[in-house]
Image (cartoon, rainbow, N blue to C red):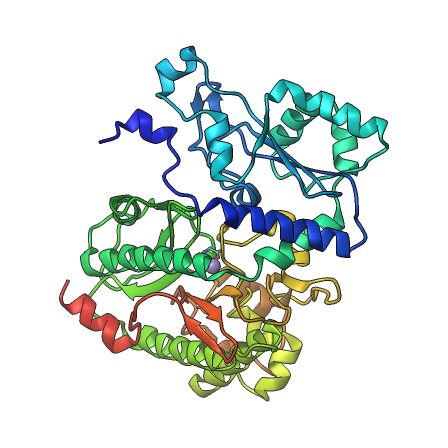
Length: 481
Ligand code: GLY
Ligand code: MN
């Protein structure tokens, strides 16, 4: 039995060493195909990140590119990958006896390196001489964008390259090569993503079963986290458990749930391997939806079905997003909130009053997969450009879907009082929005439904076990609560 200290520095999850070797070879091949035939890729791992003093750190989260290409869930390492021959060198220091007293024992760096298929291991202090040799040979350096200033500073101290030189080494070829590899999930990654969705569903069902009028948002969020941790998982992002779902990323738990409220739960598990689940469920705190909530919830279910039916490999995700918007505009017209031609309304962006975000994003080792490499580069590729139209401008994924991609499907319907009032004052799209009718709905709040989907060679399938979110099924859960 491991103690918790030993657990902290023991790598519990890794694929076979050949997995990482093959991934690095593929990366080198793609760089070479893009015309980068020599030079050094600098891959820094993440370090510990202090909250308010050096020894009180945020929970350690390894860099996702590092997890993908190296796999070692250990801070303060550096990999140099020689593009000319594909050889990796791992720079890291063994922990000292003083460290071990505080953190528990850890395998030697040489043993860790073997788990990643690496034999060339050097102390961190040798990194700058390796860089000097590369400079003397007029070799170039290639880096990915930095999303933590401290990583750039640490890499600068280790390598002897200035922060400006490191910024100048950020390579579009490297970014594109990494995206093109990571965006197509291997079967072993899909298995990990399935695990993440299984636990994410358990988190959602726990709250769906247990919340009662009188619970605070803090209790709701704590139950969701408890369910994740009970399964040995963390959270893939900060839980949204709110009775005001119309605020899209509402992280406040400072409320008391009451009969008549809707709860929007957007939460997911991160499994040991780092893969993320991301689900959203909306349900009543009481036993059933009221009649306005029921109409909008049924419409959300329709929009969801229309959007998922539109998924196909080779299709652009922006067109799937448009199918969801059209379904929404048609449904809101039937209810009487919108009017006119639904296709024209979508073309003009009038529906975005009720759905001001995108239909989905890729999911993998990051819940918004690879967004640290650039949201547009990941979601739009090299040839597509993001629209500036309100609503469409928030679409994270637009490009052509390929088998092996995993992405969220997350349509929502929101009544945002401040935005409605502004559009009415501005008389925005009077030909498409019936502001008189809308006044009767303005305080309904917000709903979202989210699942994680895998593109296959012939279509698409949702990840995780069946979870019926129809109104009837949700009300069944609630009436048993
Ligand atoms: N689940 C949070 C998000 O997709 O932004
Ligand atoms: Mn999401």
